[in-house]
Image (cartoon, rainbow, N blue to C red; front, side, top):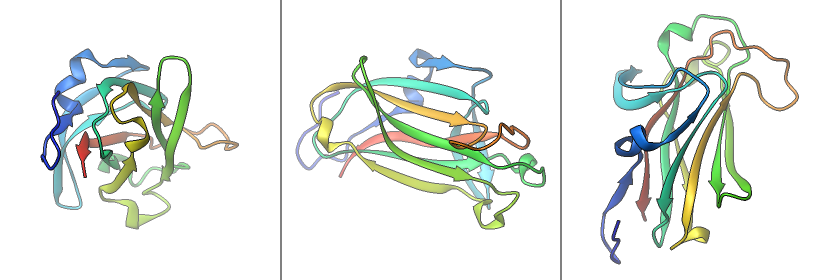
Length: 158
């Protein structure tokens, strides 16, 4: 990918879905509507990881929306723990984490936008790693109602 100063170009991670490394199953791509807003999304397993290899542009940012499928909103559970970061193939650096629990928090029955600064990795070949866990760190294992979604993941220039 070629990025030029001031361009609005982006890396559409969904376009790389077939080549992405997937750990856990099942994964699928679908159009999903949350709170009236439809996005193309990756449906992930409760405990899964999907990895995309990209060259990070100058002023690069990861943009993604987090969600949980509506059929899980009324199911008890402790939510889905989402976390993402980058890897150079030797080490993983976590850049954000968030638990989404639409059962306990009805305000989370929507797409939740996340934007992560990748500018420290400008020009580098890196793996963008999107992870889901049935429970956050220290929490008891509980995958009830865990139907996580990564909406429109992309790397953009700011």
